[in-house]
Amino acid sequence: MTAKIIDGKAFAAGLGDRIAETVTAFTEETGRTPGLAVVLVGTDPASEIYVRSKGRMARKLGMESFEHVLPETASQEELLALIAALNADDTVDGILVQLPLPRHLDSLAVVEAIDPAKDVDGLHPVNAGYLATGLPGLVSCTPLGCLMLLKSTLGDLSGLDAIVVGRSILVGKPMAQLLLAENCSVTVAHSRTRDLDYKVRQADIVVAAVGSAEMIRGDWIKPGATVIDVGTSRVIRDGEKRLVGDVEFAHASERARAITPVPGGVGPMTIMSLMHNTLLAAFRRSGRVAPQLW
Ligand code: NAP
Image (cartoon, rainbow, N blue to C red; front, top):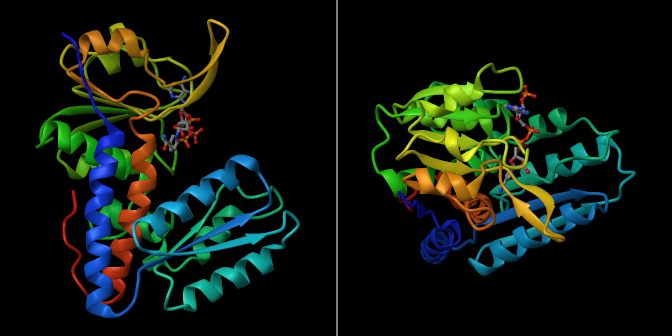
């Protein structure tokens, strides 16, 4: 079997077109444009790139982008004051604080300070609670993007056995909750899991979110399974720098029914899910029902 390659870039582009159309309609109807505020503390080069690309994408889709950069030395109080101002600002529908924050800042307290209705990263405990209890909230962007790819590939996920490798608040845990809500039987694996290969071999759906290059061997993949590879690791192969996932792609794609590549799979979905969440927050905050875009 040769797996279908799940093209996250193409899916994200299509979703982006639908978001842009809906932004135009929302703006015409309400007289205001959905707005995303991104907060960066410090000058970490990777974070600067992420923040710039989020702002650029928001503008490309017709939304307002507000970028706030605080110095590396900013205090917790300064950051909380900025978040309070963004919470109170009616032109801001989504607030994202770029993580990780400098070590002297308390990330959890910062995330908790964001109005849950504007928490487009889906990291606030209230949104995690909504997800766990099946109530509508805002869902963490990367797992939401993974779910979109899974549903577009498989349709109904009901009754399938899924394994999520990784249990972070950002990816693994919300991914497991989303799959449970789709009526999958879900195993969550982590660094203390025993016999990981045995557990992966049982799964119809494998979501790998560890950050360990090709740790999931191709021959662990059940024939016909669908594989979503979230992990990214930079390695040197044949003298060249390469980005690889958590799954041994070449062998896994000989067994899987469908698989995401790294890069070009989950990555492009994360930013588009953020745009989706910002639009969703704008609809909800204006008392309107958002159209289903995926
Ligand atoms: P994280 O917070 O470091 O979590 C990693 C998880 O992997 C932890 O739960 C850890 O278990 C588990 N783990 C570590 N070693 C393991 C092993 N040998 N076997 C099984 N599980 C193991 O990372 P994250 O934020 O979830 O991100 C995971 C990966 O996804 C990273 O490579 C990150 O760069 C990537 N990522 C990509 C995107 C994208 O848009 N493409 C977005 C987000 C993240 P414990 O809990 O026991 O420590």
